Structures are given as structure tokens and as C-alpha cells.
Length: 391
Image 1 (cartoon, rainbow, N blue to C red):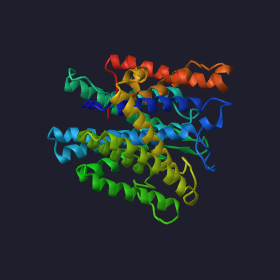
Image 2: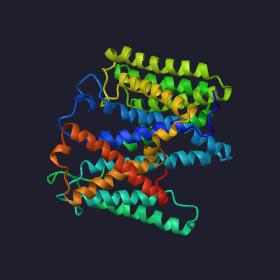
Image 3: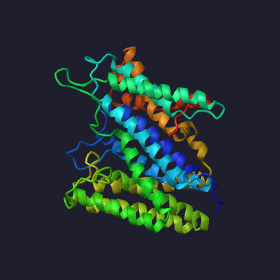
Image 4: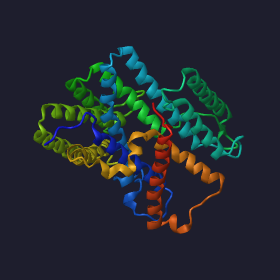
């Protein structure tokens, strides 16, 4: 069995697959007459569809990557305050983007000065200006001009925002935090737990059990309090699970205990699924909408097992070229997430609508897959021009 490369490519591939599927499920949500198992399951139903698996997988992947990012800064001799600032700024960036995206859902194009599509395009442009991964060759002064311009644009758009109905207009407010916002809050807590523990596996395992306990207690009606930032700890539990698996993986690789690794990772995945099924009747069933413990642990277990397969295929067998077509989704993930906002807004401006056969059934499903490939292709073009977001 050959040794793993310094960079764990399976994490990038898992992230790319998950981002590809996230674009797909977001698009297929607008397709009619598709099998129920593809769609998000309704809140009142005890169960989950394929679409309900994607977001928790992404939270888990953020956890997988987190130790590498923080350890890299520690290895460079960065101080505690420097790393803490990095964590805080990264979390706030995700929370801010999520906040604006959530308010787009409540945007009132009839009372607002700007049409919805124009407003969405300008928000996305401001995100690029603020959080673009600017090349090292660009002077600091020019970079500051771009960043300040983005902040100014975002501030103007915040003032111009009109939500709610004509009778009851509303300004910007956190209806919920959106996908990016949820990731941001979970990252804020998980990253600080990792930093304070200095990557100690035992402490992090204890922290994982605490957050999992909060999640279970919240849904079993044992915890009668609202924990600000933490909430029901579902997202944090998933992210902390990713951190633990990442640390276990690197430990086994360091010791070259590959056989033990395969067995233990498979057992962890299966036990996670089994626990989810066990707790299901006592904690609100399986529900993505309510973020129940059964949903958390079943999704975590499935993601662990998929990750194990990718480790074998990519890190050990070197089959990363199998996933070359979607590679940009793993290396420019945030860009991939934002490009559809531009694409669909342009469709709105030119009044483009997919023909009937591409909006229903199999034709619609094929269209959603093609849209995911189109988004990733556009992102690959942006990558070649060094246009990618980094937070």
C-alpha cells in the first residue's frame, strides 16, 4: 500500500462532488414531476430525500478541511490572536453573504428601486470585490480600492433594500441565516474549539459529544433553553464530526495503520447510521427542516462511508483524474456557489425560460445535471483568469 501524498486529494474530490450535487439539487428544485426521493422531504414527513443529504455533507467537509487550514497557520508561526482573527473574519464573511442571500427571498421587486435580478447581480459583484483572492502581483493600494468599493456597494444595496409586502414593507433582517450563514456560525464555534484545544483528539471528542448531546436533548425536549450561536448544535455536530475523522485519518496515515483505518472508519460510519436510526423515534424522526439528531447522524454516517471510498480510489489508487471535469467545484467552491446567482439573474433579465420538456421529469433532471456542469465550466474559466473567491 503506497503512502499518501502531502495533500489529501480525496477531501478536494469529496468537496467537488458535494458542490456539484448542491448546484444540481438547487436547480432540480424548479423541475416538476420528478421522483420524490430526489426532492427535499417536507417538514412534517419522517424521512429524507437525496437532496437532504447534500448540505450536511458540506458541513462535514468543512470540518474535514478545518484542521489543515489552522495547522498550516500554526506551522507558519502565526500567533493565537492572528489565527483567531482569521477565523473570525472568515466566519463573518460567510454570515454576511448568507444574510444578504436570505433577504433576497423576501425581496419586493415592485416597491424596490432595483429589479430583483439587477439587485442580485450587484450583490454578487460586491461579494467578488470584497472577497476575491487577489493575485500577489496586485499592489496593496489597488486591492484596497477594490475591497472598499465592494464594501461601499454592499452598503448602498443594504440601504436600497425593500422587502416584505407593499402594505408591510421590511428592511434587511435575519429571517434565517441561509446556507452560507449556517456554515459561518458552525465554523466560528468549531474552529475556536479546535484552536483552543490545539487539535487534541481527546478534547475534541469530548466537545463533539457535548454538541451531539445538545442536539439530542433539544429534540427530545430535555433542553428548555435557547443557546445563542449554538442553537440546537446540529450543524456544529456535523462539522465537529468532520474534524474528528480528519484527525483520525492523518493519525492512521502517519502510523501507516491502513488496515485498522479501513475497519474503524467503516465501523464509525455504520455506527453513526445505526445510532441515527435508533434515536429516530425519540427525537422527532428524520427531518432536515428541523435538523433532528437522526438526520444528523444518518447523513454523517453516509458521508463517512463515501469519504472512505474516495480515500481508496483517489489517495490510494490515484484515480483523481476520474473527477477532473468537476475539479473546480473542489478548488473554487465558494465561487461555484455564487455563480448560479449571476446565471439565473441573467436568465431573468433576458426573460429566458427552459422549454417544457426541460422543466419536467427526466428532461428536467438532465437539464439540472447540465446546469451543474455549465456552472463548473464557467468557474474553470474564471479560475484561469485568477478570479476566485477566498474567505
